[in-house]
Structures are given as C-alpha cells and as structure tokens.
Image (cartoon, rainbow, N blue to C red; front, side, top):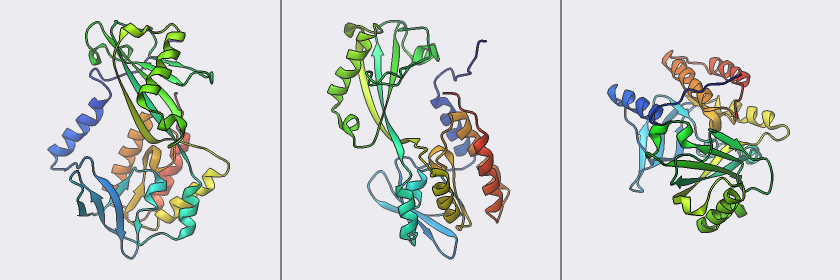
Amino acid sequence: MRRIFFYPKDGIGSISQLMSEEIKTNQGKIFTCARAVSINTNKGYADSVDYINQQGEKVNLKCDYIISTIPITSLVRIMQPSFDSNIHHIADQLKFRASLFAYFMINKKCVSDNTWIYFSEKKYIFRRIYEQRNYSQYTVSPGKTALCLEISCNENDNVWCRQDDKLFKDILDDLTGLNLLKENELYDFKIMRIKDTYPVYSLYYKEKLNSLLSHISKIENLISNGRQGLFNYNNMDHSIHMGFLAGQYVASCKESQDGWQNIIKTFDAYKLID
C-alpha cells in the first residue's frame, strides 16, 4: 500500500503564514519574540498577561480570554497569585525531552528517495533524517537538497551542551559512515536547539497531568491547549485540529470549563503517524 502525504509547495511555514494573514485581515495583532512572564488573575478570572517584548521591556496586555500553548509545566509557574507549592511540585515531575535539529545543505540533487529515515541504533547520534527536496522541490535551490537531522536529548545534558563544531563532526562522521554523504558535498549547516519537544510518558503521568488541568480549570477564561499545553504526544495536524476546536469553544461564549474538559478527552483518540 502506498501512502501519500499532502505538503505545502513552499514549505510547512506556509500554513502559519496564511493563518497570520487571516488574523491581520480581521484586525488581529500578532506579537512575536514576546515571552509571557505572568498571567494575572482575580477571583477566578484572568485579567491580563505580562510579557517581555523584543526590547526587553515588560508589557501588560489586558485580555478577555487566554488560550495557552506553552508547556503546561511552565504555565502553572507563571500564574499570579501563585499556585500553591504542591502544584509546582507536581509540575516538576512532568518532563519533556528536548531536540537538536541540524540542517545540512547539500550540493547535489538528492541523498535518497525517502522523505524520512529512522535510526534506532544507539551508535548514531541522530534518530531521524528528513530530506527537504522529497517533501517539495520548491523549498530548495535547483540541483541541491537539504537534510534535517533530529537529535533527541535532555536540556543541559552532554548532547545539548556540545559545541556546534563538535556536533557537526559527530553528525558528519555518522553520515559518511552510512555512505549517505561525502564531506565535499556539504556547503553549509545550521544547528537549532528546541526545548520541550516530546512529553515523557512516565508512570502515573496522566494522574499528575489531570491534577494540573483541574487546577487550571478553576480560572474561568483560561485553557491550556496543544502538544505542550496538554502534554499530548501528537502530530502537527492534531495540534491544528486542537486549535480549531479551542477557537470554536471560545467563540461560542462558554462560561463553564466543563465543555472544554470534555473536548480534551477526545484528544486521546488521536492516532500517531511517526
């Protein structure tokens, strides 16, 4: 059986770009590089959000409703007045894995005919390779391709803290050892570090997660959503679906959190394609 995936011609960023254009068309505003530092509540209602802008200034933004997609473990720590220490202790027990993404720009048309390749052997530093040209030829220069190598790690561990030039050498050694690449075919590279990419499903994680969600639900106009916000190991299309449902829920002017809690339960039915 042949499986077909639909992919945007100009890359996956086209989806968020179109969403942002629609928001702006409807007089919405988007603040980028803005780090939320507190959600200010009063009598079970979120009044405002404090964030740090690109200039390093603290800004207070009044709000009617908040849909948070930051890690739920971070969300409970920025609530003001602060949640009790027991909630913080529970949040400390929910862990995320981090990821390094190494992008190798290759001076040849293709490395393989696969969109992705998995590596389960511990001797390889990476766990998965994506080849960009095999998703869309329009996302790379003519006659060239690009590899994205995903490396799983924990924040601040040996891999996370390894210098980029050392990571580059380790990755290149593995690629050449697999006969996927010759060093003289590489013309550029970039390494990115992303925190909180994979929720870790440890023993009794669901009970701990439900304790956090129950506490958050006491804030009438605040919901936590998305992969990180619900500690839900899902795919991108699932997260978009979560966003649609959250938007519909808020637009329906629901005053009780009960309906949203019922929606959350349906997310457990997602089937992963990984």
